[in-house]
Image 1 (cartoon, helix red, strand yellow):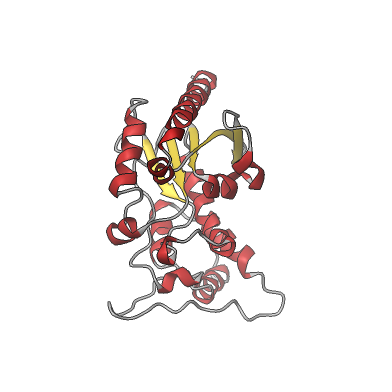
Image 2: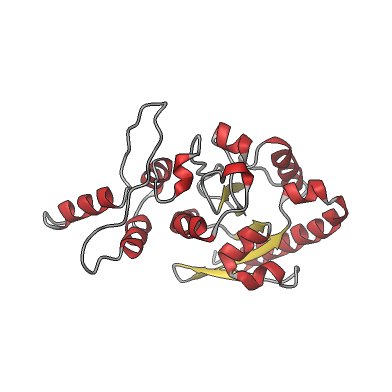
Length: 244
């Protein structure tokens, strides 16, 4: 980066509220406003900044993000967990109370059910699966994530996918499915292959129910098992098609 571009990037990061923000433990984070400059495109500039980040700077940016009002009520942002070169990527909607407290995705009873679902396929979070959410901060009262909150977090998810380069993606719940694939995916035929394009490579995507939903609707566990088997078939096909 040349000497002119470096100060410009630093000012941009500062103006967008993307840099480190130091606050007292009892203080509340106040989101900053948009860049006040003629012809500025803060959303597009922000996406460009995030799309150029490596893994650790991306984690730091998520942890200090103040792009939407969820920053004022969270305990901490939940980046995700698992290996950084996973075979599978599992995407949920947003952290709940347990996740907000511990800083990890899918903990508590829903997390234990997810672990059991993965184990049924011979998978583990520690070895095979990175787990994250579309939205990185807990919505108050565990309400559904709003469209503008999803839009603020989407560049983070896109960069995670690009850096992780999983063989297959599994979305859990209609919000995560719609956020990644579009609104039609939430009501599409369940056992159906979707895909996303990342750096010119198509990554297969399967959809299934969120574990929290399955705990309330046990009669849909059979459908969830079919979803998991379908996802495994997509993974096996991706492995078979991969160059040696």
